[in-house]
Length: 243
Image (cartoon, rainbow, N blue to C red; front, side, top):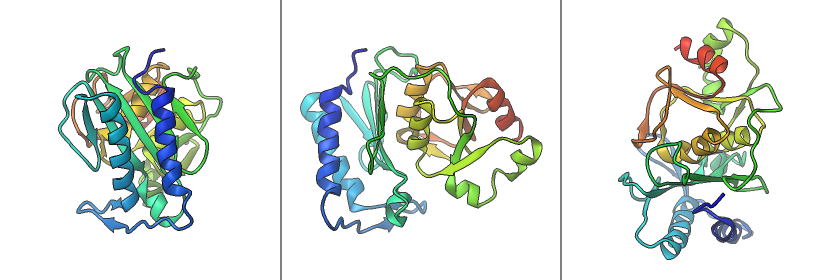
């Protein structure tokens, strides 16, 4: 499959990640935004480096990113330089870079592509890979912070599902696309840069993204506030009927 996020672009991004994290002492200079989420110098440095790569190779294509422009105009790249920044701050290392290309808001657009890479190991998933259409595992991945707050207990009392908490929604979606989870669910608001790449990858393997009880066909806005699940019809019914 032809992809705007091809091997050359991925290798350039990996090089910038290594240049930042291979240093003996990475200075985070972390702070919290108004919504309580973390931001670090690494977020901004990766934003600058990846946006430079994209602007050099694709001049004139819009870039939407968490630490940059929030105006959603298609076609565009959608970037989260460090998804799961809390994992970087607290040392769990559950964080990833997520990059999508969307010619239009439609997840079914044949030119849409996604790329998710772990920031601390070799795991990556992208649109040029042959991805499985179903998981070899039977558990679901959920937010570590949502699990700690007990937000999934009412759902588990309704019907048991095996759940595994983990940081970084993009990383969870990437693992699911790679066949390492049966579903991914979240109860808290997300932004398009958190979910675009993973939603594209999963759509290409015929896994649904559901919100408000219906399948989502378009990513046409920045903010997504309703409970969301990526998975089978059965898992979506279990999750959304309990909301």
